[in-house]
Image 1 (cartoon, rainbow, N blue to C red):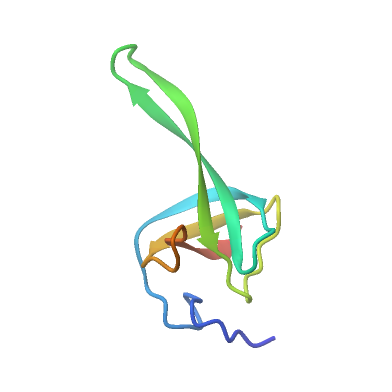
Image 2 (cartoon, rainbow, N blue to C red; image 1 turned 120 degrees about the vertical axis):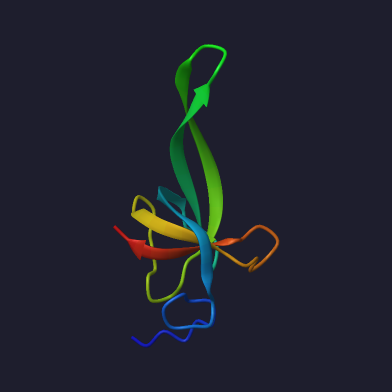
Length: 93
């Protein structure tokens, strides 16, 4: 299958920038988009300990990658594609 998505980082014109993150896809109900949950540790200086936190990020899901719910993915920052999408999935791990 040939990828004709103009917002694909490998076949289209979309350039990635910034950091690369990893997360788990928790929703794929949108067209060409997924919601990725990213878990990380945050240091709290008052208690001198780390707290586990998570965030949900909306990312563009190119047709050639097509990530599904439960997949662990790598995603990167890019220019804003829409109001809520500023990330794109690079690969499924």
